[in-house]
Length: 196
Image (cartoon, rainbow, N blue to C red; front, side):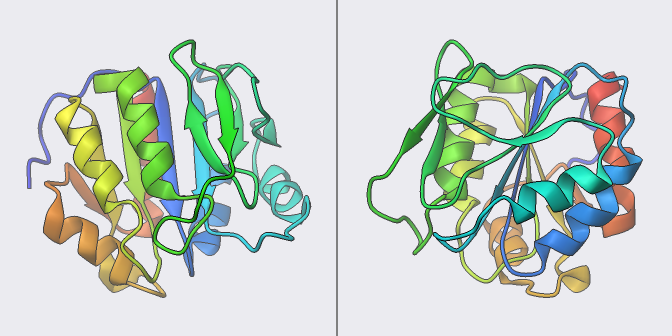
């Protein structure tokens, strides 16, 4: 595990998670420094009928503006975007969002793999992909593309995860820069945004 690799300042952090990951996010968002002018993208497995409750809950814990990503919307710095339910969320070359309702991947829509892969194509070495607690393999294939494009990959420590399979599978398949305890994640993200 290359924990001391020099990492370019992150422009986008894409965080993927499923069962057990919401609690980690709720404990992370309050500690993110609001002065950063970068963006965060959150891809959580959600029920197709989920309404705005998730976004409202995350916004309550964050000093950053939090909103659901919309078709054609440009990715603005200083914002947290959440993948909407029942769509795959892709990043276009002009750094805007597009939504895709094609078939589920890893039984999931939104798929973490889809968002990680498309973000990697656009952001290259300035992308950080972070995988949290979850029960399937979604995110691993996307992280392989992130690494191929020079980006950074990190995972929640499986021992700390409510549902460890997702970070375990990613760690076995992709070289991680960091494996983090939940209470280490805010400082790690702040460090990445400052380019240290």
